[in-house]
Length: 288
Image 1 (cartoon, rainbow, N blue to C red):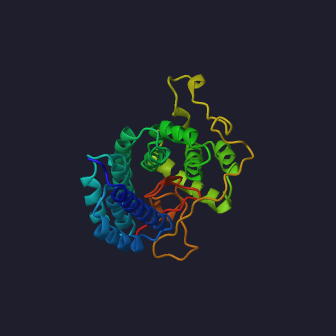
Image 2 (image 1 turned 60 degrees about the horizontal axis):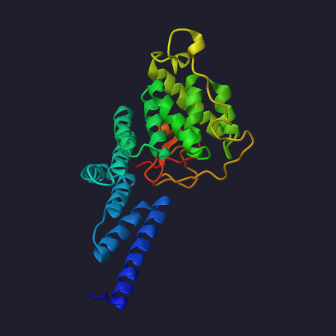
Image 3 (image 1 turned 120 degrees about the vertical axis):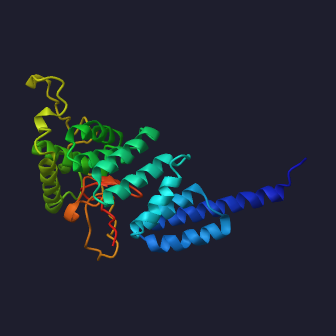
């Protein structure tokens, strides 16, 4: 049989229109227009039927609109398919929004197993470990994320948070100095979050112990330099990605990715529905 060229052209046009519509919805979510995106997802599915991408975007929108249980139900349905990494990440973000950082770390670990080189997942995993008081567990994923995406402001914020929590303020400042828009309020927020992390760890994991393979001090881990992270000492990363908090004024911004920090303290940019968990200049999307 000879395919009808006209029919092929029609199919291609329909697919392009469908993909363009999905891209439009993604852009709306990037801008924090979660409620509007839900309406467009409904319209998309009326015209084109459901799809894994549309379902995940629906779950992200529901989570950011405060419909946490509905979002979790969708994420769970998708943990066995090709979108499993994104689904587990969504579950991690949902757990983080409920301040269950240990649970969030478990979900992020599942996501990381399915997508080992996704820097956002790695950064979220490190942030969740830090907020759970598990500094040692955060070390490898935050360094992986920092080296995979050395100019991602959310990842670098989480790296700075790690150094602050580790008690290495000099390294933290070195990372922040290489970033754009890392102002005093950002640094103060990171320091406060680092204090919470250290208090939560209860001294069980002292900064000097992290990365140590033995008891001798000569085995202590040496923090990497900005250059080793791929960060030129005078490089500005450009404008940081900022998302508005749902229901808040434009100025009511939180610093991290998606996992809400206690008392709205910025997170080391890492968790995000469209991004990641963490602090400096990656804004958290919190539920109303």
